[in-house]
Length: 230
Image (cartoon, helix red, strand yellow):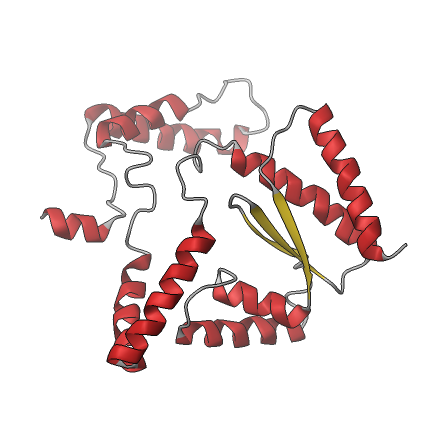
């Protein structure tokens, strides 16, 4: 029996155990890929992402790290979509592949049922394919330099946009109340934290005072939205 057939048999067993434990998952697809393709996949972020100069830069970074022994812990890359896609490195031992299959189904169940990801788009591969075709058309019409100029500007805003906007709306007051509930009082007889308890109690008391007074204002992550609104 080939390794691939053995893995399929093990996957069948894993699916039986999933049902027995009451876990529910979306359809899971696996690919066994080479080291070079794995690095390219990590650099591209999505299997069918649009072409961009940063992809080549990131690929060279990952390849250099991998060649010097800093990336040998990579076993798989999982895209938590519907259906879920998992790519497993072909050079790892069979036992590691088996463990990875189990791990991937854990990914699948968690993200399929997680409140944080409930409202995320599960058709990202279709969206990425459409974007790729659109950008290729833009390159023909306006030239690659113009397209990359726009993409560079968009990438600069990438870390300054709140991905949770609309999904997890939260006011300043709500955040203060949530943090107040999260503050845990340190018991007087707690010997574990005794050396730090005096300092920690002072810090917690100061934080509690700031939260209750309403003076503490949380930084706005979405700078682009802040600019639009102000």
